[in-house]
Image 1 (cartoon, each protein chain N blue to C red):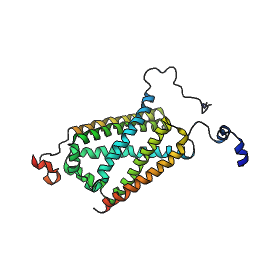
Image 2: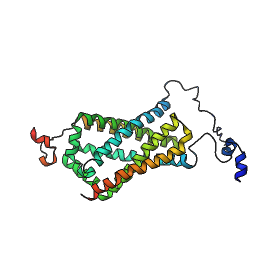
Image 3: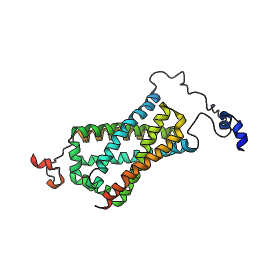
Image 4: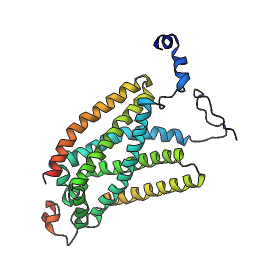
Length: 137
Length: 150
């Protein structure tokens, strides 16, 4: 009943279905939060592995080259696309969170779509070039 | 058993019993400050290692040796190491606090996170500052070109 809804104040409209005062419940605010957590955990575990594999430069050139060769295979190449995708989303959405906290929460939905747009542009710049590097060697 | 749920709009207030440094507040600030710096550091890291030249296919010991003997990249990598591990560890701590319901489970998980962060920061920092780009007895074709000049 859109006519009826239009006569209600914004406060009344929001209290019926979801609590007012949070942007993390439902729709863009919630899904960006869910994605931020999932990408954050994934990046954290990659970081643990990545420090250990890089530490092999202190063991021997052979040991380091052997492990880095596994990062250059086609399957890991696709994994790197997923990793960079996660990092780029986490980075841009992190900047969005900072803008919500220090600037204005009013634009959080619009900023979520800006995050997605910037993610697409960044991935368009990265993925083709990376896949060429992976599959042509 | 009844549970009281605070009204969603009631402002956050620290318990009056708590005194001293507000670590949660500084953790919150740290996530934002380190986050901004990490965007620059990690985007630069990904660009140089995956986009320039042949990207991931060009990575090997000689490539890393070239970077880890350049003071600029040593500072870059050590900053990235510390900022990212503490940022990630603090993020994981938030998740454990949210999802682990038992006090003991939370304690074990957060101790494991702290141990991983401390061990990897020490390991990574030692690797960067004790790195030998020309280890004796290694085949010359695996080493950076400047090793043959020594």
